[in-house]
Length: 309
Image 1 (cartoon, one colour):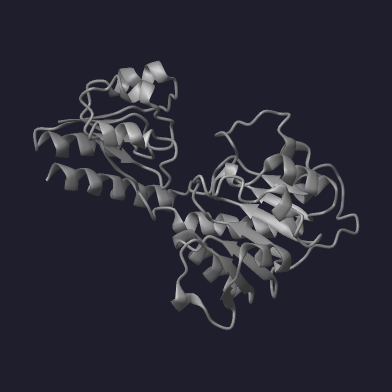
Image 2 (cartoon, helix red, strand yellow; image 1 turned 30 degrees about the vertical axis):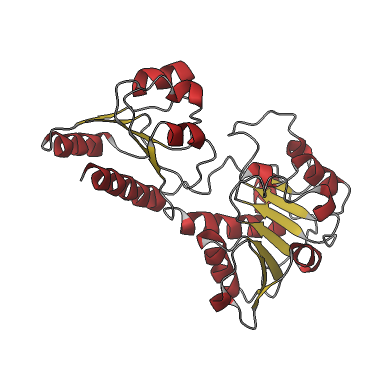
């Protein structure tokens, strides 16, 4: 079979050569493209004669998939699958496997990092010090002792809660699936409205589905304390971005840390959050650590070997 990685997903040239040799010994061909190109025509060129394709979060609509008649297996080097036309894959018997769990720690750590940045203005202070400014009487806040609302208690939500409990936080949680074993004196499941009203920090860890799109709406944001902050390392469309920007600028919310948007960055300069007050923005980097990428490559290769066997 021909196995094509349409982007490097952290595979170094030396590892690509090693994988090529290993697969050749089993009479398979392995090709790893050294760059990322999201142009549909280029994707078709790279994928058209492959039976197995490795891809991360590049969009794969039916218009691309329909031109890849040999495709049998998609190894998705990503957790979410909302960028792939799964209906087309099901109809055409293309098996799809993701790399769930590879970035659990990476995303959870970034969520906590964004909380610290929003509370302590780390990014903003870095700009100030380079412009000969001091702290200008700014007083930050501490995570310690805060009530944190964790929206979604899958693997990443649970890991985030675990890290926050080390800070002495009380956890309120809302999730479509509840884990009774998590509940204790400092961890309690509540309804979403209660979580929004009572949390000092709200951190989002749900997948993007029809149910979760715009889950954090203007109405939900209106329930928040004025000194609450919102962190989103999940999916951009889970939040009504325009409503979030309005809440920040009106002082109805104290701050936000955002890693994900309606589109993959770069985002337009006139995006509502670009001018929002006390809003830390990063370009979808939650999953991007060396450790996570190493885990991801191992998961992807194990899925492919399992399929081949």
